[in-house]
Length: 521
Image (cartoon, rainbow, N blue to C red; front, top):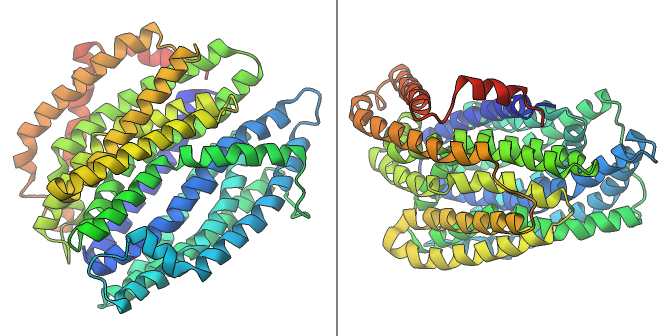
């Protein structure tokens, strides 16, 4: 398997999903705006996302994929049948746990919502009851997406990365359809319909992954739950991985709760829309790299090839920096025209764009860190070490909380994103330092030569785009055709300038690109 090609497959579909997500958010901003209704839905949407990151996609994949790969690759075993049997045992234990968790949240939705929002600033009892109702509508999504995560882990281990990467497209298509077909003049009803659509999308994603597994020859049966040694080991690995995988989500929940409590109405929405734009490169690069690197490094370590695993991580970090640094600079420098082009119409005004761009700049400072976490943590998970990342994630969460409290009053809606960015950078530093101390990751000559040149190229691009910003501003708030054309030209100009800058600085050479494409992962 080639790392670049695999990333292209996953990243391309993830990009399609993120673009659809921007379309969804654009429609949501038009029909709901930045108001109590949008804040209420986004808080309700944050709850299943938190648990998904903690117990489903992040933690479960980190623990399940290496164990599944070892079962399939074991020369003394039966190969795929052993892996399928392990997956059946895991599903049979996971399912009742998830059903029980969902039932508890549905029953105790009021106190859970209160903890998530600290009561919600200025909310009347009727308004708070509305937020609780939305939480109840969205939480079944966790049950569905957790099973999707297990099926996706199986398909990723079988190198069918594209199937799992395509699943979020169904989420965005469902929410877009709900906005187009069921929006109303009342933003509260539109927000309620979106909450219902979240759970419906989970059912669609589950059906898609279940069908893909059957096409791959994997048919899982629901059996009586049995805590055999393999399942016990999986459970032991999941709990520490949960905090490590969910660090960013937990930081965002803390930020959301503080913003809902201490800041004016609309602040939660500014942070959300900024995070959605920040998630575009994170999804394209970080999730793609994390998806590909974990099973790849697991197999390499399973063969005892430490040198090859280290080379894979070096190339992963190189790709991350090559793609992330220009995205970071662009989102900081061009935040206002980007936000205006996407969201400034309908109920979303010019000041909303300005405040959202401020939050985006603060988030984007941490973009390289968010993605490097995805590159570094497979080095731990592939070695069945889920405890070290959780220690560092806990430290970063403490840093995030302290900085949130310090920043939120003076910096308002910029405070929580900046705290999250700094906390993620602390996490990356700790992960990187420990891998180096253990001798499990050392930057090779190619990475040491290329990284500073990539930074210089990104800064040159940023300087050029800063000078060109005013040229685009009149067009990004015009008609739909004008704003999308202006945004496309803005992005294309940035890409061309960055490409020229990488050649000028020697960060990228044609021979290097050819060698990178040919290098196996």
